[in-house]
Image: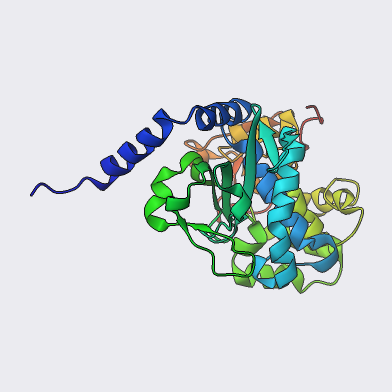
Length: 320
């Protein structure tokens, strides 16, 4: 007997579904046309998780610290926030109307845990999964058919997709990168040092000092500062940029001029609402192979542990 090619079998199963489902293909095309890279979708998921954590008020950064009722509410918020971002029309019987077709939206923190209501039978479902600890997410389309479902045993008689029939999901984005939750993934000793400080300004200074060469989102800044004027705590004129300048640390924001500096130094460029900090040094003989940027008329590189701290130059003017 010849060995079974599992991936080929899955592709064949999906091809059979696609061949006979014009609506599924139309919705798939519409969604990919609106967001070819998945960046908008990923941003909605990142913002929704942050909205639930409400770090500015609570100081929370870990999904596991949410109350059960908050986790239950996550699906509703994902549904609402996706509709706001993509301006989906309201459905008559399902959540949305996409490309003129009724589509329900189901989110689960656990992959495969989508709870599908009985009234969704026969309809298309947008199945969404995100895991903040893994920094991954997926979204796909599924035609709800009785034979592909586990029968519900809960009070609402909600159904789940049988594991053997997940190959019938037409993925829009599969196991894609979720913008990182820095506070969740940073070194525990560094995180403890940041939150041990009493003032929001001190905590932000310590964050940018300890978390370098990585994108830090505005929500992380908000959570660490726990102050309504948190953005002021990053800028110069008394903010973290001023406080850390004498240590040679630059804090680049989401301006085009700052992104250019980050790219020339070989660092990840800040996206909208993000910052990247780094300690730099004047280029010397031992830096000849390092990427450099010219600021204040001199060449600068990412500092090595052997470089003594020196006053950082001024970043270019803020232009978008």
